[in-house]
Image (cartoon, rainbow, N blue to C red; front, side):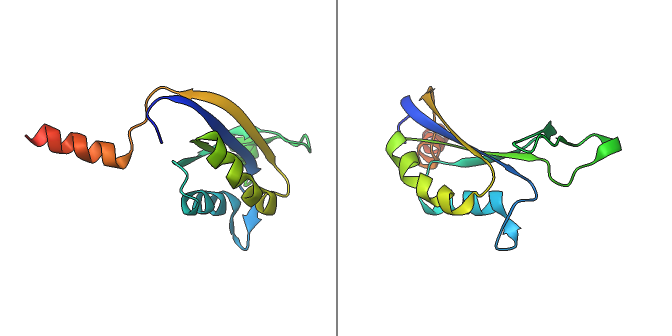
Length: 122
């Protein structure tokens, strides 16, 4: 992915307890994003939240939840993100999928880091 310019951020909100074939749903989404060659994916675990059911899920000690909110965030070129959306249609039964236009300020891919390390060694 280029190092600066417009991109699209895909955020998928699901519950920690959501499953896909006995595996955590967030794990399957990340695996498919990687297989699709997307730039990267991050899974963020929330400490409190609620969704369409209005039931609050929290990590507070007095009301521990085993179904905390999870956000999977992926940023890549718009065409690549939009091509990935059918995967989510198959996976996400209950949840929220959000697309936001973003501007990438800087992104250093693995190849760029390797080149920089080689320059630093000289």
